[in-house]
Length: 354
Image (cartoon, rainbow, N blue to C red; front, side, top):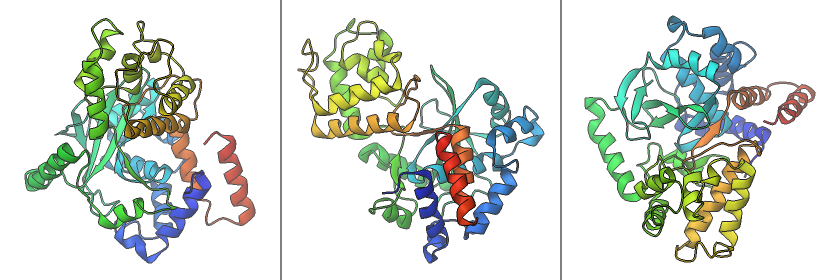
């Protein structure tokens, strides 16, 4: 499976230029040139998202739904996926600018996290079968995030039944209904970088694990906030909350440990869950499926590429920052350059910790 930025860009270039493209993308995204023109229109300043946000600033007239749609397309180029959620990490100054545009979006109901959803669906025709772009504002202990999620249906009256049908299916199975069968097949085939599911809402197996963990830990075994989060078994429970409760950390140490330390702990749990100094996990059933989940968590913390930082995550949502998105766009747009210049640009992306 392609992993590096250049590998992903090459795969997408070949996909976009194939006859299969029309079954995946909307009418305005039917060629490599369409994508490049789109990025040049929405990120004109050398595809630098920082500069675009700074230029728009807190001028509400400068922001529109199209800005959030373009940000989603950039996220998809960075880590393409069939279903899931992107969390775009922002600094305080960036959040002040983006928040101006966010407040202009129409409010809508949402079952995700803060539940304070906004819609950017007007003119939204990027992925075939997806009619809605959900946008949410997420404040966490470490950062402010803009949450972006493509959905098959809007929440208007005409789409109420299919939206509820998909939600009910997700409640029962842990995953929503397919919006694009061709994209689903592509995401589940071998040797593609498309993620089948990268959502912040839990799988049924992980939710059951949290509920079991919550019943087997007594009050006072760790910080009250982490224990409460685990017992609720809702998407607001973070991986760090889970580790605090699982290890019965009195001071909630996993809330402040580095990404590297969290990743190493998750990897160890996936290999040897019962080998601890005090036998803290003996009465908790860590099944092979949960071990596999811990390995996925460990990989996601590794993918952050910020080992000494302290970032949080809920489940398998894709975290990304503006630098990574800007570099992803630049890398994607090198495929029509001469080989020597393309290689030079790709080397620059790798040097920038893409």
